[in-house]
Length: 66
Length: 160
Image (cartoon, rainbow over all chains, first blue to last red; front, side):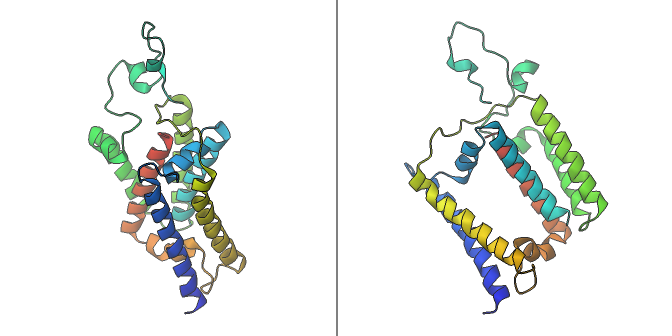
């Protein structure tokens, strides 16, 4: 496997891990927070809220305007 | 800010803090409303989002049109969030460190691979995530789908 395929496989594995961890967080009485709860926790403070929302906006900018 | 007006003394008048309170009407849109439910409750909003996604879908690469559209949208969003009070779902007050560990691992793995590829030159041999997604995001359908998903994620975030 060349480095290109290895890198693509790495990103795919990370995406799969993200989905699995979020699914684990949705089980009843799970100690793992869902991604939504994690972001809500970060967004409790004003700087955290601005940072997360700016990151979301930047993601759209980065992937569409390039 | 979460609307806790109904949690206080029941004899006091609730404070109008949400757009629905301020307009005096009962809105079907609450803090638990999903993007899909929002589309069903307000079809005109879906039409605007679809037009926005279509306009961005028709643009290409690092050109002025998508940058101008996204910059204007960004400023409009900032103004809307600053001026319109929102009802939000309550955030967890505490998170377990052990429970958060899987997320830290996932985030660090992504950041590590992305930075490694970036500092190796973002070449074909070492592509960053956007290098991998660029060919797909250059097609109209995928661009429109991405923008719709992005707007849905944004709706979810502002309600948290």
